[in-house]
Image 1: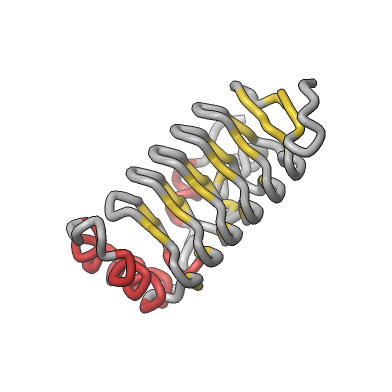
Image 2: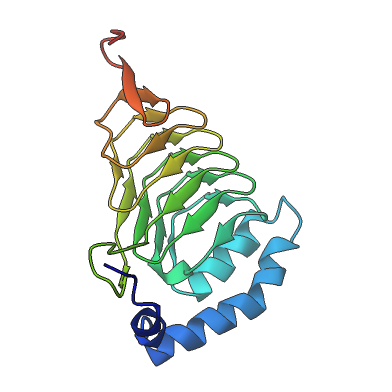
Length: 184
């Protein structure tokens, strides 16, 4: 079965208003990226202006790359570290007090490889309250990271991570439960 590139490229993936929003966001992005690090409120305001739901005292660093801000919801006191990628083709929800560390990649989009036209799939992604996605980790489409869970540095998960568990590796595997402190 050959990939049908012509059909894929001809398929309309975005509404007209989404396309306009994406162009406007691209024009405003330099105001986000080149803002001084301490201007947390400025970046929260820009994200809210583009439809993101952003809680109080959220810290989003200026080097964070956000594809579609209106698909983004970040709970209060959460932090998104330097150079993180929030590929929000579908909804991304980050819970209160959660941390997404530097260079982490949250990917809320993929393609249906079973269809020769490889249509775009806009999946949701959830990072629970008090969860931590460590440096350079990758969280795939449709994944939920449970409340208080940790995905270790450079970990890769394409499956849900249960609450209060610590996962590590590629593919990520459970290594400890933070409640029982039991190593698995």
